[in-house]
Image 1 (cartoon, rainbow, N blue to C red):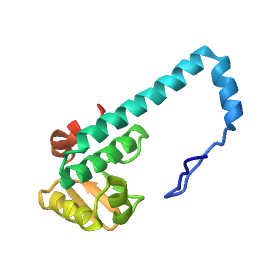
Image 2 (image 1 turned 180 degrees about the horizontal axis):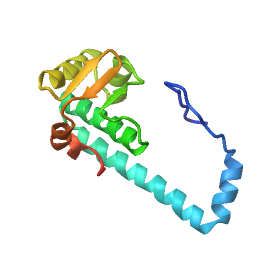
Image 3 (image 1 turned 120 degrees about the vertical axis):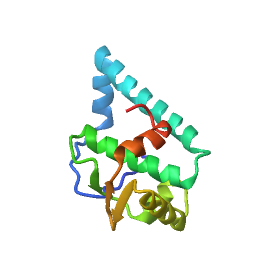
Length: 142
């Protein structure tokens, strides 16, 4: 495989052999349409987000990252205003294509503005509404 995944916290997974998935997808038109629809939507969302964030400043990138995580937690019906980051600051910097120091300064800037509170790996969106208003345009529609 060309890609790999690293679980950053306890994770459940279901392994489906590629040949079995191919067989099911190609033998079921509804399933095929659904799988390709979901994949195309995810690719489109990622492309839009990367395009929007390409010219965004560092604080905006970090805020969009935190909003993205919050939305993902909300979709899973988990606490989404206060959550534990699975990634440390260095991993976040790598993911966002930034330097560690820049990520740290961005967290500090967001805290000084009263939008978040961060302590270690825990983040609280203290003004989630304002965060959404200011930075949600950098993310795909919720």
